[in-house]
Image 1 (spheres, rainbow over the protein chains, first blue to last red):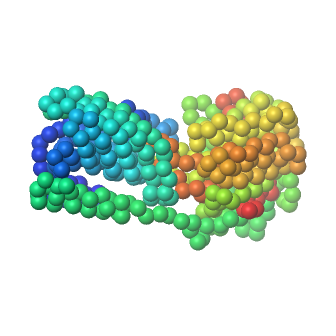
Image 2 (image 1 turned 90 degrees about the horizontal axis):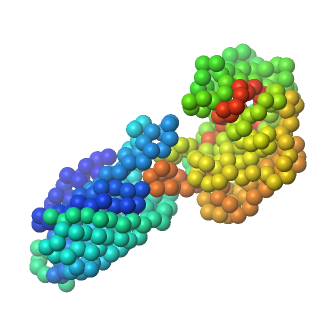
Length: 151
Length: 266
């Protein structure tokens, strides 16, 4: 748990730079069946490249004995392009059930993002595998599409 | 590539962050040295002889791990009258399932059967009465995952025929094609052999009184991570449950269990 705290409290804020923000609904994708996400741009590179980080929330009922799992996907994103962008993201999803069970997964996103400068509409779609690299390395192939608002 | 020194610095730190994340959370867990590949019980062990109480079943780590009794009316006990061999069997009794599974079972943990291996379970069951008992579960083979409902395969009774249910690992039930009924009011030898695979490279063989009644090849026989519903699978079956692991919604059930064995055969 201390590792997560170190990353959230010290490393992510230290590379924050600009103020651009997005809120988007992701169907399927890094949150499992769907998630609501907040994203903030933190830097640029090479003229058309950006760095950002995002935090999301999702939940999925399992069964009576296990309750519901609450999911918090946190990702670092890098996008390349002006309006039509290529996007790569990686991070950690923190899951905790209403019965107190806890686990981590590594979500990855490789895909396309549409966002025209000075326009609020945001769209993204891509391949978003969920990787278990704790108990044994395994990859769940998955994908997602997002619709959102940039401000 | 980077437009300014500051942005270059940001890029380096971003890369560093990715590496830190991957290293911190990139460890793997392998088979534990103390995990066993074999367990058997005829319920005639010396440790049981000196103690009438069922606590003897859970006297130390080498014996059973825990029991499940989800209703006050459910019970299990040593039985001296209806035995397959020796002097004792275990009698399980459970009311019908209603609003949550009615369970009456014992489980053995700290076993380890890995993907690529084959496990063979042998047990003698004596099912009392002729009442309908659809989806009475007799044997569970489970992986203990951080998040998930003990996913794995379960031997069940459907239309009074043995079947292998895989619902907890998001796969379909394996039904027998021959229509061979499960005998009632007599001892029945069950043998369940499975080659373990999280891909479609596994197999299942179920024998009833030495007759092959169910065979499936090139199937998934172990759970794997499924979104956030099942998390942390490692390709190891660690827990085996016997008795009335979940009763049918149809009727109450009484059965006897004797002479069971769990073994790695490949």
